[in-house]
Image (cartoon, helix red, strand yellow):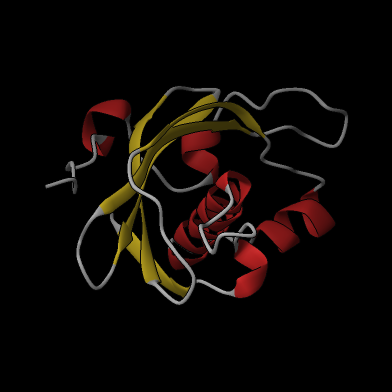
Length: 142
């Protein structure tokens, strides 16, 4: 399932030149993953509070392609690319809404840890995925 969220680039998202600071993209991607989980029936606040489960990022590969700028509208697209018993890899693409230019393309791998810090071995079941073969994302980069 592909999920999209939109943002208008604010002054606080940019450097002194009005160009989006590189770390801002990571924050937007985090919001995209949280929203993807929410749209799939998972609230990360309830996972942590009620079950002691957290989902840290363990690997990220990001390519910066084109800078977003102050007052651009951006779209953060999030889908599941693949999963194993212990991790899920999200594909995330950020585009400028007005032009369709791709700003970043990233693969973000997350895992699930229980309240004792141990890796949970059924992350797919936890977030409602079936199996790896069913979770190959369509590539929304055009």
